Image 1: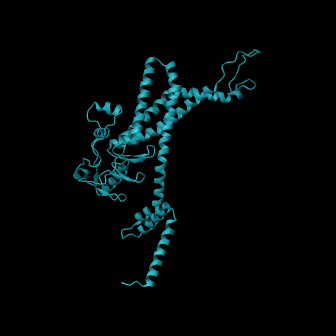
Image 2: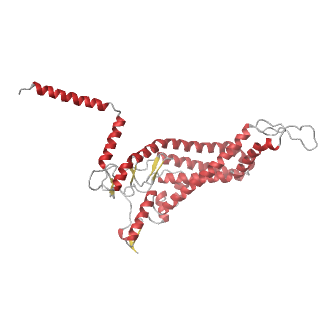
Length: 382
């Protein structure tokens, strides 16, 4: 076989052009090439097939926005966790350094025992459940499902999804019995850590309410002291004061000389008053917000729902009502049974050992299969 010199020259030119083109493309950063390829894929998806509708177009156009929000939330999750640890630690430091000495000097032995026992128990429950909620995996969808019923296919993972499984864009995985993604945990709330999340919210609310109620009188006294300190110079002009604004001496009526000056208002006293005000405002605000969130999740647990299922069940109820039927949640086993399943209570002693004390027991089931009511019971004619 003979080679033509002209054809060989042409082949070499083609190879050079291709290599030059590859070198030209390789000059772009890898992350920029990925974004460009992703944008091209979005544009091509708009005319993928005849099933394209307004929902597909909307998802494709707003996919960069969704991706940006998920990316920012994923990286800011660690900052939120650090912020939670700092806020809780600041309240604990104030409680031990400022409030505990006042308790020992003011209350009776019975009240001292109550405050010490309850406060430390509440703190242990908060720390334990927050740590477990952040470190425990919510439950991910395995790549291989054998003999597991599924209700749909995830369009992101391209895997079959069992009941109550949803895809989390921030974790970029399918979560078993997903409730929501919590940035304050930097983790998803799913089948295996839902109990830890709710227990943390509950005991955190109880701790905030406890600090708010027990520190109310201290807050009023501290606030009044700072207000008097602020307006003291204006109320008593011409009388010597310290650098903090407290009177060095007061002249009684008819006396021409100063009496012995009372102890000056020190910087430590001022910081103690400000710490008490900070603790009361923070715990009261957190108690209200976390209390509302805890009540919301308690209602959902009583109904056997998650936050996502609350919306899907509402839409299913409306859809079945248009057909003259009543929709029944297939995962609702009764209020008491729902709580037993959620908390993992199998006998009476578990209400103490698994609810009122730190417990790392796993939840009921594997999160893949669920005991369902029959279809005949779900759809009852009106």
